[in-house]
Amino acid sequence: MNPSAADVHVMISAGFYGVYAELGPAFERASGHRLVTTRGPSMGDSPEAIPTRLTRGETADVVILDGGAADELARRGLVRVGSKVELARSLIGMVVRAGTAKPDIGGVEAFRSTLLAAKSIAYSDSGSGTYLSTTLFPKLGIADQVAGKSRKVRGPPSGEPVAAVVARGEAEIGFQQVSELIHVPRVTFVGPIPAELQPGFSFAGALTRAVRQPEAASALIRFLASPEAVPAILKAGLMPLSRR
Image 1 (cartoon, rainbow, N blue to C red):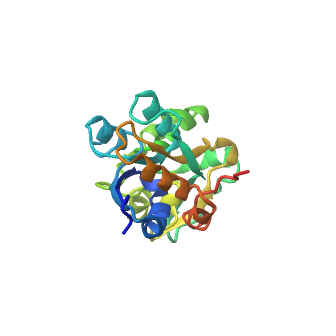
Image 2 (cartoon, rainbow, N blue to C red):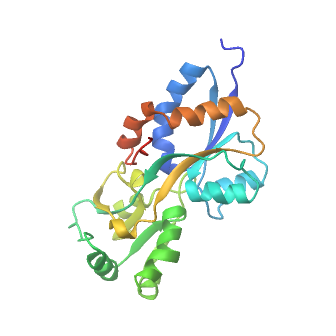
């Protein structure tokens, strides 16, 4: 038994969870540390959102979440400035219900037409949905046209992936980060939204201000940023960072 073994408290959002769940046991075996995991959205106002949990004083050594949300937590003094490490890049993608035709989203105009033609649209209450509703729809000049037919879906743990809403036929098209779409049954993955409309999302790890196990927490972040993590990152629908 490693005498310096520690319980590492991790708060993690859904987008990177698949990678973490696959690699966590290997980290525990190699390090002797034990991971204690809490899940919640990167942002938003739900009681399980990571910023809300940290503000409430819940225990965490490490947060793994949307890179922009990590920067915001640093500005608010909830994570250590300078501790952020980018782990993977993430694209926003679109799904339709299995068995329905794939709309054309190959270019900006085609994508815009698909949004206008859709009877109903679902997006997440976290990073990707915030980007679509506050930045992308206005940029495409369609915010007013889609407002009445769009719904925001509260994510796990108390909610569900956007794709589950589409699978039930409650929304015609759904948007979320690709990693959160591709493993949901009864939907067809149409593809990522056009490259020039992608917001450049990433997932990152950072140490919280109240970190109790900084060495073990830093070791976890290094492990998730290492070359060994690349196969799990790709399998999860994320893009590894090219580390020079």
